[in-house]
Image 1 (cartoon, rainbow, N blue to C red):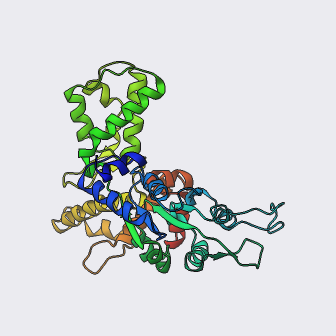
Image 2: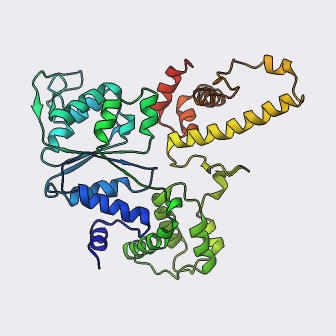
Image 3: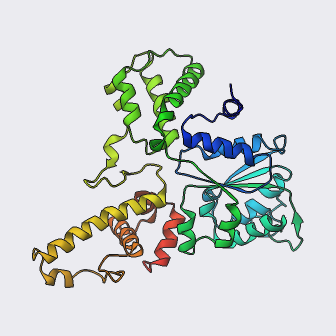
Length: 373
């Protein structure tokens, strides 16, 4: 067994594809240092496993690792959660509370879904990264912490910076090293090893037998798009083994546990878009924009061929922003998608956000940016 294979076995990193081998080598290089690492990739690709491997192979391995989901904390509470607060700092602050940066002192903190962090909090995070200093909410006393910061995101932070939703100085500070995890569909040679591991875990945990997969079932597992990545694969394997207890599974058995009916494809080989999956939200918006762009091009072609009257075009509901070449800009396409979702759900923002596969906080921000209030 090579050193790399031993490392992977120790920290549960499965995959022999060139992409994963390169990632493992980078992890082994950066782990012993205190450098900040940004881990990016679609939801379900294993970002937290990479973060745990970095911590586990670091000099801080014997200290605590704290994981914080920035997207799950309300905007009004996130600073208190991260930096703590003094008694009486706000109405419900009946006692002093230490924040995650104090709790993780000497160890590692993983800021998951960092792209959801409010701009005001980003400023304070940058200060911690630069000087190790922070202040509890309601206090004027600067405190220090010795924490290694890892960040994870399924967003395209470059795009968020361009849209002024993420500070460029924080972005460049975070990505001292950027480990990007490829989606499972781009490293399908790793699927057999992942399936083998998940089968082993499920049978041992539930004390059940498994008759295996026939060739057609295996081919289906290899050809499926896996929009939910490794997380979806694990859940599918668990469901198959538990509900089809002891059976040798064929293609029809496996197909019942795949969500192929939710996939939408186009005849120009655009990337597959999944409805209500855990696909990366911003990337899905771009995919949808491409599909709508195609429709717009077809409509323009029909206009030129005289199939649509100029009157219908003039009576459109709003003026379309264009880039000078008669093509809709990305901002305008995104604005139209948000407006359409809101109209379809009669202004219900929660349902609209669910349809667009973005968080409510992101939807609120886009509503404000595009003047849709």
